[in-house]
Image (cartoon, rainbow, N blue to C red; front, side):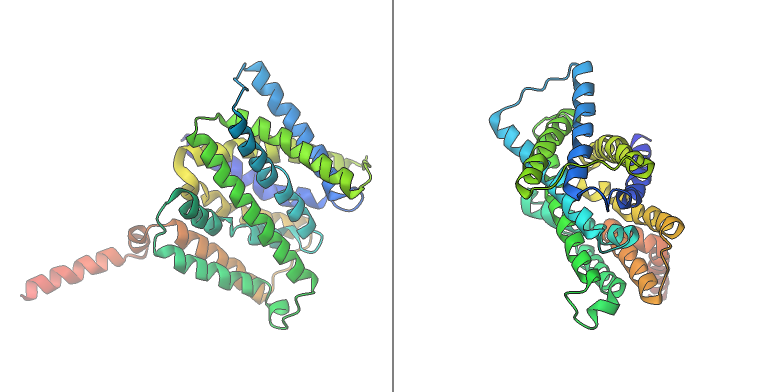
Length: 313
């Protein structure tokens, strides 16, 4: 029951954050918006930890991992994804981000020795075919300077960085670091690193006082960062990266629905085919072969054929 509730919360929030990001773009530089976002989130997380009197002292080694978590999950992954949404709709970016599923499984193998099931390769092929279909108009001309291809490259790059952050969170949990404490330190370091980057980059600290910007900033800070990451990291700890990544299968559906309502996202045949292939690939990756056979009724067919063969003997 707890995992189901966490899934629902994570899917609905992260599915909607892609649209909220659209309202962050335009007036304020992405890196500045992210400094605001993670500073607010860090204050909220630290306030929670202080009120709950959670232990916040950790070794230097753990702080190094908090910094890695900051860069990968609370900083530069989002900066890259914000850049990507300058070129793509929120729907397209969210679908590309769903490749996090395969990246998590591969990285779990690399960092933690978790075996990769054969179905993963089939799912990855379907996912790759889906990405090609989604961006077919640009892929077929090999126009790597097109906005869509640039956006795709940034989306996949940001997704890979986020996957490394997921692996860091798993490592922290395995070392008995509380989810809230780890996130609090991660968000603190994330906002600090983004501030340093913004200062070096020479970006101007401006604030868009219009309601869409302020409302989306607060939504992304409170719900998209504090609540959603807390729920997702608990899932990572409780059931592991593979099963937790089921949320990644579902939130593009929410993102696409919202994009159709607010951005005028229009389906094309290649877009629809790509969306279906990516979702199918993710489902295949996450679903054991026996369960797939059961869903398709193949187990019954195999059992019936075996009985008939035995009777013939």
